[in-house]
Image 1 (cartoon, one colour):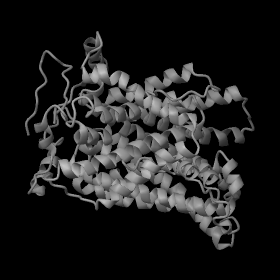
Image 2: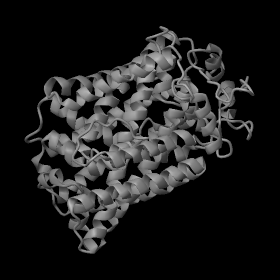
Image 3: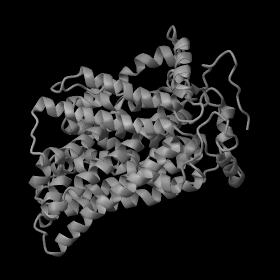
Image 4: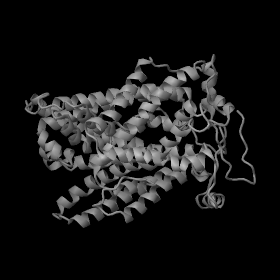
Length: 546
């Protein structure tokens, strides 16, 4: 393996590896005829030298499973359960959609296994788009990868962290205020929620900057905690089901939504709840034995999550009416009050544990995306640097947090602004409309899921001779591609809303930065000095090129 040396007089040298240097890609690819030797080579990367400036392979199978499960099971099952039921129109269709979202996620994840083992690099869709389309055209080839990075860094990840942190604040403070019989006014409630959300993000940021192993330990512990809380809900629901509480379930499919637009909108709530199934693809370079652990973690995690989601909703429906679920902001807490009595405090505690774990997993993966984008030369250089001792992407993580704080302090509660940036999570806390943020997320992410499947099909032809440890039937990515396209088009045609226009406008706005800074490679005056300043302040340095 050849290492590119960073010039001594240029600490901000860029490392554009995917579309500027074909040989570097081949260093990571598997040999065409000998997968074993290549697997050993890839597994040894990141472990050969403790002084090597690269992200280390520290994530094993168990941590991989907890990263997927712990990221997927967060606030979605608690926040979007009522939203999905409202859009579905009936308990029967609601349960079918929860299962369908799980199947969609599993098929998508299997397709990502093929791409992730073909291109064993971190960065997820960003690096896949760059590999699939980057060399096709000098101008248009890298655009999709840049647009994905633009939307992910400034929209998807911020909105995810914002929703999660708001959910944490709501579930954490609600039982405390109830216990002390205190009902704050709207302004005070706003301040308390934002303050708690900020504290949550700040603590998780510290853990992720401090150590990869610390972040994975936190993920493991909180995932076990959230599965315990879920077991309590499922167990209670099955108990009541055995007692004959089936009235709400007997409604079946009566009143089900019939329009594609409404069903697609309901699907968005499910996509939010299942988001995170592709997180391991963002950290492939830190995953031990990725050719084994990537598919195995997915096969374990996604069916487990799907079963939990369906049974949790069955449990809700055995105790609460559909109207109560739809109108409730804290469905799990209402269920706990009705079933557990004096032990009902366990539910908000479990939700808090669940949301913290999901926020940790989301922030863990989000930092890697910004890191890889910087490494490929499509964002400021300092974002590609890692801590010289901890080997963590400190700068991207802190960027997300700092921008969020600025947004928190400058936007008023009543303003329904389109989320622009959350350096990232706290930026998105301000709009406060969780339903709208979920629609933002579902619409935007469906576009890129569809594009990823197109990339897989394209690479079946452009990289047809490359060795593939995993090769899924072509019908699987085609199904995911078609479903994703429907999820993008159907809501616009059936029930157009202004937020969909905002998402498209935000995507196009990325071209304003792409043309001068990526295509023409212009540099902002003073950026070199700023990169050096960041190196000194954060104790970070450029990574060794792969």
